[in-house]
Length: 336
Image (cartoon, rainbow, N blue to C red; front, side, top):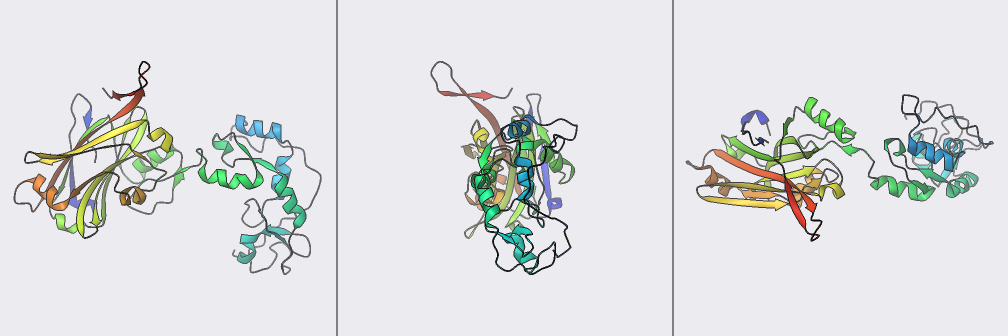
């Protein structure tokens, strides 16, 4: 959807109401079984010569893991090798994924690989415990070799995908990085406050099916939230949908609630819910219908006039659920 055809009118008040809207290039690796090399304490620093506490702890538990980990590094993709581990007649190893990528030729000596397994290295892999690959981002966990992959797929310290819905953006990073990325690269509007009042205007609302309209990011309670408003086909019916996503993990998202309200001509619709984490893709949230959904005919009714122009006002607020120390029940903490 061409956002130039949309007029977004924001309003604010002193109370903080705001708007939203291989090839086969030769790789020289000679992997040989050898005694562990001395650990290089400068190999895992953060760029300033300081080793992270998680990395230091992992090294203290397994001081020889670095050299063994290097032994298990595939010379083609540089990822850790998991069984089956293949080798050529000269003993050079590589992972099963890269075996097909190099057309069954050893990337080191160019000999045919065949179907030789490196059973000794596979046994070494089975005996290892290694830190999570996100240890430099703060994860302190250490896992058996085979459990490591499962953990890393769900690790809370893994980078987030860009939450922008208007394109297939492949950028990943932590939350501060993604906020800056949304602002600078996607030119997303940034606002502060826990209440919002946004008007969506469209001169020809019958041209908006299957089009993402808008993403607005705002800061509240020291956290960042993504507010989506868009139009798409729900079955045979064209609808508009507004929903909120939390820029953080699902467990943190459950600490917050939000409400959305749309109306006109003496009628209104209200939605209350918990923001979804950006771990869930934009499409997954939209297709689960987890938000305020307005049929187009009703949206035009709310707009008033001759129902040929969309003028839809969406208001809402966010609050943080707090535990009542006396009764144990959750009480809302509203943003002032």
